[in-house]
Image 1: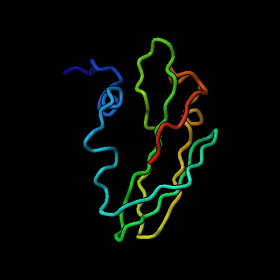
Image 2: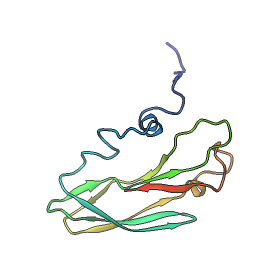
Image 3: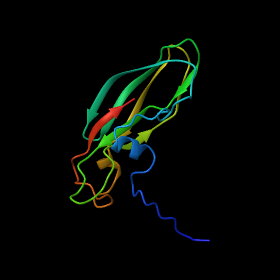
Length: 128
């Protein structure tokens, strides 16, 4: 049995491949966690990350996975997905309750030189 598995797709596997090819997946990240609805407000972006409020606007208790997706300019000649999920947290909320979700920026969480991306050009691409 081989000790290493080689993916011919490179880093563009799963959701990364869909994103690279402009295809919306049938079941997005966090799909199916709840039988209620959530509102996302008050996005704040800083050099150290993002934060936003999540509120259960439905009539039942439920859980959601707010996430922070970031995009960056890859280094020349490096194949990278257009966006990368850099943070998420499962939050359970009763009806009408709210919570603040925070995600540190990739630059704040990844030491320089650990990724082949150009340092300092990460930007929020999506939040939910």
